[in-house]
Image (cartoon, rainbow, N blue to C red):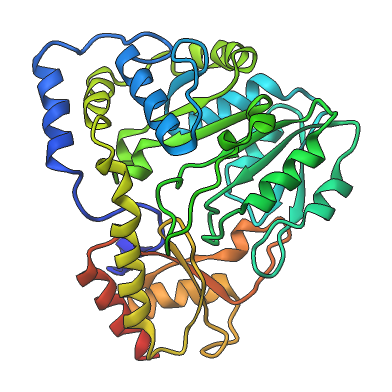
Length: 359
């Protein structure tokens, strides 16, 4: 609809600015150097080593380069291969509601059941409700922080709660951490990899596409203990098998400088703050975004329309495309809230705000 009506697209989660020239040049270099054939199935060794070093720097834990790191076709392949490998028909996976839209279909493709536990009104995890949702069929708990669509992040207390719920069980954890380097206001990302108890039972998925604003490159990876990695790789091998070789070599080089990922949060926080400042005169009410590159806005002071109808109207009549958040809920709950992607040039964000402030 954004294309059809010529609207500014703040709906889908992709940046409108370029990938760093240094990174593009490294990909080009390796293409010209002949690195254009199949990479090893788990990923280029140099990239896995770079991932291990980055993980140790960020979370104080260095995964085994050969046995615990697998490069994937974006984080979504990591998620899909992990669920496919580890969850069987008749089992249950607990996910939070609202949830990224891919989780439930992937679970159901295995013949398993997605058990959705509502987040609180502040988009926090209600651990008592999670504990009550655990049954003998529970195989996995899937968490996502920073959270899409809300931008909420988990705390150290959340990590402790997850440790307690899974202690003494065989429940696995799948932690979707694709926005790990996009956390704001000086807060730290709480990866399950920081927890010795959790990392023994967890698969963590990550995304170079999100971190380096190259979503079309489809470059992700997963970290898991050897026993889980062995099973996930059985699916990965017959799914994508191997991932774009020159880009892997380029990323291995690029990660040598920690500033490449440690400055990402500051860049996106500036964009978030720019958008919020420009939107301040509007009737939209912002819901705090602590991470990701998404900003939720309550429009209830503007219209009584349902969020899908309002999003369609906004696209057609105002020229701004956003995502209605009801699509992330199992019951289609309509809170009169839209999700805007602020991974855009500041000129784009100001142009959007000018249109929305006129409502």
